[in-house]
Length: 220
Length: 281
Image (cartoon, rainbow over the protein chains, first blue to last red):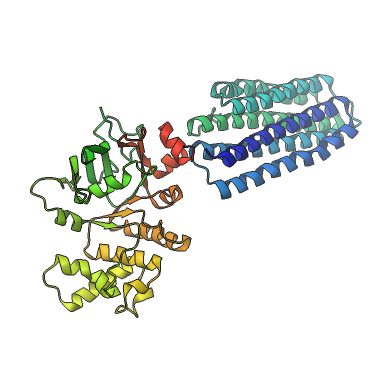
């Protein structure tokens, strides 16, 4: 048995789960900062991205070393390739959390439309769940559960469309319209986090089957 | 029933014993069993070897891959007590048919061995010309010169030896000696080149030179290469066949054969998966 290779792979996967946990914390922080209009917390979320980036770089470095030294093949190779992709998806999710935090700061002082903010809380909870499902199904090599991410994503997509309609309907003065514009971007960030979770699910399917396929046609 | 392993993914082609490889097979092996005395070393091999491709045979020691390789040009039977059952068709003709001269088979199916083995008393020139002189009764000196140069160029050795063709082949480095042996093999213009661990005795630079050479040679020859080095198989071959044994005393069998990228990224068989990912033993 290739003990070192297996240990390296185990380490990579453990780091990936850790990165996922960091990303979920970033998301929770961003949602709380938005809900509570907490600029200080938004700053913390922005600074916290360094933690995610460090984890991302650690995983990437580990992959580079493993490829150079262990020359993995077959399932081992697919595992490394999948980890490479998932790593990037998690890092991007965390970047969206930073964007939400920055948007929160930009609208500080403008009274929020609580209906819309509440809708974001619901979207955010779904996004958190999707990150969890994506990483658990990846760890368990559970393709069926990974495919369930499509349905969860559809709920976020619908919420995103509703949020856009609500913002358009809210109208108001220039300050309110600017607030609305920023909130459409927040909604878009949460929706994209869901998309990346689905992408992670597709990596689970690739890892298990060796064939890459998109769960849904992105042109729809 | 023994299923035929070919380079065509199962999903693309269908039934057992009826697959073709890229529409142009060079060697067709059917129900081949190889024996040393009463011991069956290789069992029930069905294989299609595509023309002008590099086919690698991999597997642990004792799995029968070298025995199988030697059966393709009837060198297996040179071992006392060794015999073959089944058919090996080269361009549709069974090389084991009673009317076929094994020497003629070996001219059409050349071989390069693990350790470079130039003729020690011969010059570089004569090493390359030796096969031709043995195979043809009369040949003009100028024609011979042409063949020697063409063969040495074909083996990527010409530039390194053109000024010392009269010197002994033993004065060359190991990698050069192996390329000299390849030049000797292609001088007689075979259709197929069998290579049994051709780089295992060479340093990494010489190994890569041989692997690059395989890529060039396959334009004109069908290459079958046995290697223990899985990275070499993945680098140098288009098709990979995996041989395995169930246990000590059991015959070797062809477990899986497919495009090399498929074998090394997503093999169909668990035993292949374990072997190419080093998870055996």
